[in-house]
Image (cartoon, rainbow, N blue to C red; front, side, top):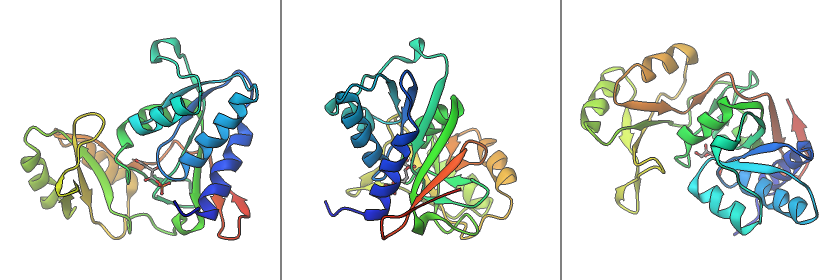
Length: 223
Ligand code: 5RP
């Protein structure tokens, strides 16, 4: 794998915010990957933390890295969640779900005191929406949900993987919605989640507490 300097810089920087005794949310994707590797190094050198993962993929990586994972019943509050994003704006609003893990990512973000978002500079945008908004839908009646979204102007496309329907860790499908520019993210969020077949959408509007942006030269900017 070719190293992406911006993603690596941001991913590793975020690990500096972790303090002993914390419960940490482990994000999903190629930027959070670098955070998990760095946390693994810290744990193997004695850092005492617990973690919860936002996807089966990140859970597997955490196990390989010897990061102690805990069951949710043992977790009261997550101290810090570190996750990637597909787009972020300067108001710390995000589009997530490019990797299909948005539901678990949002459950963990909502239970976290802090959410650090690790991105490379290309992900910082003026307006959300160029990246297609992932919407997780039930497999039951997904065709009807698709039609409802289409009628609302979402231009949905069923996500495929290797020519098969992409199935999330929760057994659902993803409809990627092509808006180009999202004008009222809060209203759109409510409208989407009001459709019965929609499980969750990839707008994360009130969770991020800090953006850690890795530039192509390896430098960092934080918002
Ligand atoms: C997965 C996500 C990821 O955080 C998002 O897709 C960014 O991934 P990457 O760091 O690989 O660009 O939301 O559901």
